[in-house]
Structures are given as structure tokens and as C-alpha cells.
Image (cartoon, rainbow, N blue to C red; front, side):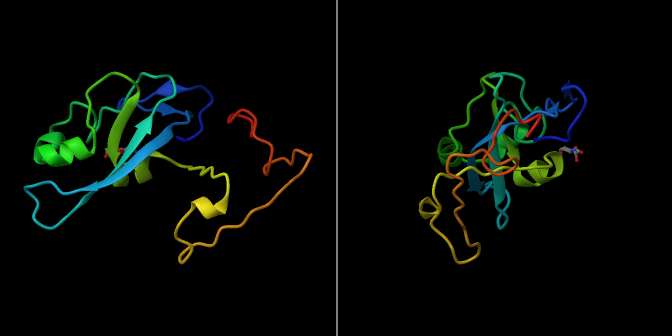
Length: 139
Ligand SMILES: *[C@@H]1O[C@H](CO)[C@@H](O)[C@H](O)[C@H]1NC(C)=O
């Protein structure tokens, strides 16, 4: 989510302050002009189904012309006002302040070499900040 704000406000880059977005994909691609470097991209979705990021790698950004047709197809790049858009991982890190990862069981996560995952079960009770969800404005 973005920096918490008293009221949800739309920024000049099209992001809404205090708003929670879903990460729907991550990809690494190689613009044809740049020989070495790869670009890491994150696809996000505004749950409103509209109001999108208009910065680098957004729907109609010229950044897309640096990719081959194959790369573009891999990313399923679409220019539709559907609330879904891509941005670079660098911009993602700069523009978002908090990420929550939901996973039903740790065995669905393949790699446990770097991070260890643990399970905690709170049967029959809601524990604030642990098993109680609630509205993200009042977690
Ligand atoms: C978000 O990313 C844009 C594009 O790089 C940048 O101009 C802006 O400063 C970033 N926002 C923050 C809060 O860093």
C-alpha cells in the first residue's frame, strides 16, 4: 500500500495514496537496446478496476517500444483502462511502503533456502494483528 493518508488522494502519477493494490505478476525482461541489463517489472491492480499509474512502464509508456514482440507477449502487455498496470521494481520500491504476502500453507512456497516459513494456527479465536483481518484501514 502507499503512504497512509487521511483521505485517499490521487497523485500526479495516477497512484492513490493510502490505497491497497494487488500484485498480480512479476517478470524480468530484456530490452533489446540494452545489451546486458534486465528490467524487473511488477504488475499491479487497483481494486477499483480503474485509475492507473501513468509513469514509466505504464500502459501507453514508450518503454514498451524497447521490448521485442516476444517479450511483450510474455508480459501480456495490454493498454486497457482496467486498473491493471506494470511498473519497474525500482519504482515499486520507491512508491510503496508496505507489502503483505498471503499464503495458505508454507509448502506452497518452493524455496526455503533463503527464508524459512513458519505456520501459526489460532484455532477458534481472532488474534489482533495475527489472525484477525478486518479492513486494511483498521488492521
Ligand atoms: C514514484 O516513482 C516515480 C517514477 O520513478 C518517481 O518520480 C517518484 O518520485 C516516486 N515516488 C516516490 C514517493 O518516491
